[in-house]
Image 1 (cartoon, helix red, strand yellow):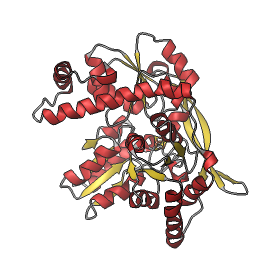
Image 2: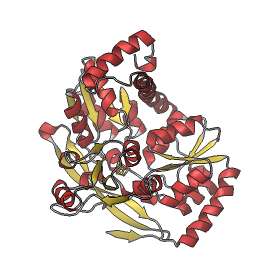
Image 3: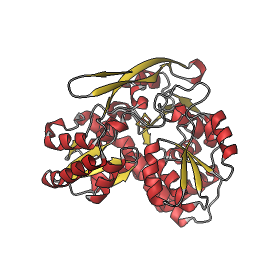
Image 4: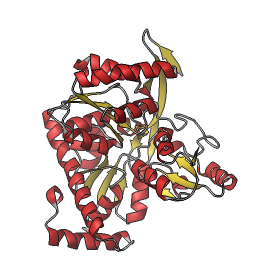
Length: 398
Ligand code: SF4
């Protein structure tokens, strides 16, 4: 479905909005949001736009932060101009530490907000402020907050793919690269948890930690589409291939994975594993970085077609696709479009993000000092808690 206005073509994107919030009473209503379909450009046009962007970034004292899922030319430009390509947390961290006064965030809305929360004094620009995320859309702050209020005995842990207002309601914010460890840590301390918004990631964490978790029933329109039965057939056709899966995917897909993890973990697997063929179940924007890391290897897209297929995304996030080079130029030449988050929300949301950052630093230090530590997560957490006590390393998450 699409429509046009004088400037652009728009596509309606269906997503699930939970009506009832727990697995026991899970129901969703189908809603739709809009995504702008960027103009198709030739390679030469893209080169010209990239060349135009280089001096614009310099003039605006801006640095470009690109998510792994945005178009390859934006990723390449970010690296060529001293910016970076990464996941949402890496982008926000890099931006906070960079000397630039302006951050151009090529990703989706919550990433711009997170950058503002961690860099309040900087100007945050985005190529498309209307680039959204089904997880963010499916977890409105007021409804989520009311859900949390019904369970005051639980800690609230939310995924980074949420609005500033939902983060502000949380005790912890996590990304997929550290979610398992943080929930295992909280579980080891005896906490019960409310998790939002992605139900598949929540279930994956629950099954690996044994934590008592109430799951908000949101889903990512990209990862939710991967099909277990069709993946099993594909594996028969490529018996040597290793399967790389992001844990926002359904259980039936995760169960067949050789590696389950964040985008950073899947990229690491591509270089560490000696296999020469991989089946990849995440947004296909990641293939650009995978091919750069291992140009001699073959990457196959995990199936989204088959029984019950809707192809809402066909493994490409429609909102990430809104980040065109043209939109980058517009953002730098119309700087009034900066991202704003109220000071009250910034302050409230920074605390749970800071807890994650401090935990992540402590955990990485601990792991680097424990090369032979237990593979069992609960035993690792017992060691980690003891290590924290002896190293006074808790920071803001005490
Ligand atoms: S890929 Fe999924 S989680 Fe990421 S921005 Fe798109 S809808 Fe959100």
